[in-house]
Image (cartoon, rainbow, N blue to C red):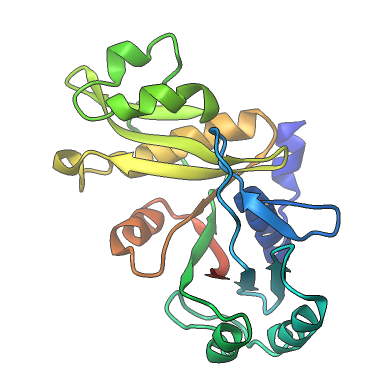
Length: 240
């Protein structure tokens, strides 16, 4: 079944829908509720999410407490957004969005699909409750408390311990979003690309889509995406 799904490539708009539904929980009216973290906790979702794709479509979602009249006004502006061509360009109507929604701050960043052909010559291992004590030492001890929530979790082992890890930090039945961490002294060696590929393969084995996103000013994460030949499909934008 997963092989068949890999053959049917989702559109950029489909991917943006998978992305927002992985980031936040929704009510029956597709209004945002809370941040969809797999571990316990209920942090509120942002007031507004805008996804702009490289094919020229937009997708906007609003938190459940945003008034309907305001939603209609913002939706008209969303429909006027141009095609996004790079990571750094803010939405055309960013100032209007901030004013109308009385935003305190915004976030923005590129969104990627990890392709099925992503691979690495470096070997990775799966980190589970059974082997976490052996590998999660010397920098990743904090991960032991959440290991059951972030599966699959893939690591590159060096000197007998995990030095780079990719895990599922947003989970739905259709897509997982990657969370990537590499110990500072082991960065720049290609380890991050290796664990992303290993994690994505594990996610695809479950029949769902592996996604990766980062912030517009995180150059290191963007370099990892470039080295991993990830497919860029759009940019997200949120207002809190």
